Amino acid sequence: MRRAAVRVLVGGVALAAVAACSGGSSSGGKPPSAAATGDQTVIVATPRTDASTDQLEAAATVLSKRFAGLGVKASIDTGLSPGGTSTLKVSVTPQDVAAAKFLITEQGLLEVRRVLDARSKPAQRCRNNSKAFPASEMSSGDAVLCDPADGLILLLAPAALDQGDIASASASETAIATATAGSGWQVTFKLTASGATSWRTLTEAAYAATGSADAGFGSCHPPRGCNAFAFVIDGATVEVASSPSTGGIPGDLAGIFGFQEPVAKRLVATVNSGPLPVALTVNG
Image (cartoon, rainbow, N blue to C red; front, side, top):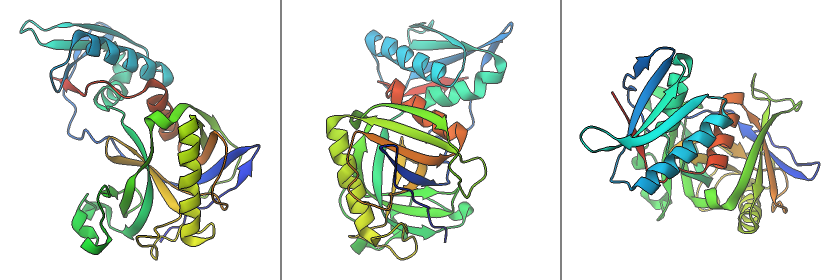
């Protein structure tokens, strides 16, 4: 089973090597068609639940930040459909339709969770199934998430950090060598005061699980867990990372390397825009 590599402090920033993995959006399903007008395609989205005008305007602001962060040129209008339903109309170029739909349907609720157990599972059989682990290992607040890209099913502890613990994020290419081609991107998180405390506690507990840079996959179990944690957006695993080779990392900067470029930029855009105040559905 794959083991995540680990690095320690570099330039005052705590670096943890990401175990290469890229999850998908939790929205799932085949995206509906969008209407083309000239050289622009108009995507119509509606709230999944009742939403106020203020919430819709706030959602438009969040999406504008996401689009800008990922280089997607778009214009957004809010209004009502002929039937009186609140709508967002997003105009993009045809080549940006797929990316725009993904960003619209991702609410962007970010969590960082300790990995308590990780087991091999063929991608075609990987399901978010709590029966994958003995009932004796499960505790209140734990989550079971599938990571088909890595062929792992993960038992995760309750969230140690969430979006409120991270003030901002940035992505940059790094010269640090990684085992996976194309995974030479680093994400640096600027933590709030409470986030810095939680990050130190998280990395201390993760490192204590094995006492080394070894993630311990294949041999780690609750309550001690693994020397690893997962970034989760909307209930779907985005990346699995190992803790640095020292525990209890202090400071308000957390740098994690080993990302693929698209995943790094997606994570940064999600953090910097904040979550959507209301979940959206793209209409055909």
